Amino acid sequence: MTRETITLEIKDLKKFAQILRTELPHKPSHVETLSLVARAAGYRNFQHLRAQNTPQPQADAKLVARAHEHFDPQGQLIRWPGKTRIQALCLWVLWARLPARAVMTERQISARIDDMTLFHDAAQIRRGMVEHRLVGRNLDGSAYERIEQAPPPEARALIAKLVP
Image: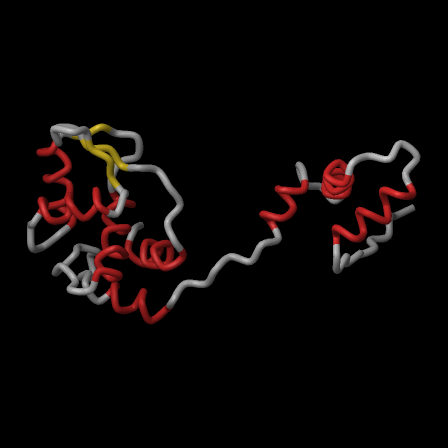
């Protein structure tokens, strides 16, 4: 005998959990009830359910297009943008091309930046990456490391266009 799939949409999960809690014999707490419902639906816990069902913000296509204009067809940064928001997006592309969890000297990171840009101003790019907290460095500036983090939606869209 095959199982029939029944879809259940719950408009207010907290209210549902409150009512369910009153019907259970051992009276779990509200948080425990939310977790029970989430686990029954196939999630690890309530936080996992909420995270999976939170809509992701959409990228601003115009902003991504404006930032994309600063790159050539090979993905090299042609010029340094004048607007700070566009600069930040362009830095994310360069960030994505840096090796993860690799400590680099100033010369090494400068060489990598020069390979990714046509105007070869590695010092400006390094400063921008440090200021935007994309790259960390020690106090004397002798060691740099990419800071692992999730890029914002616009940066993800631009990286998808430019980074193979």
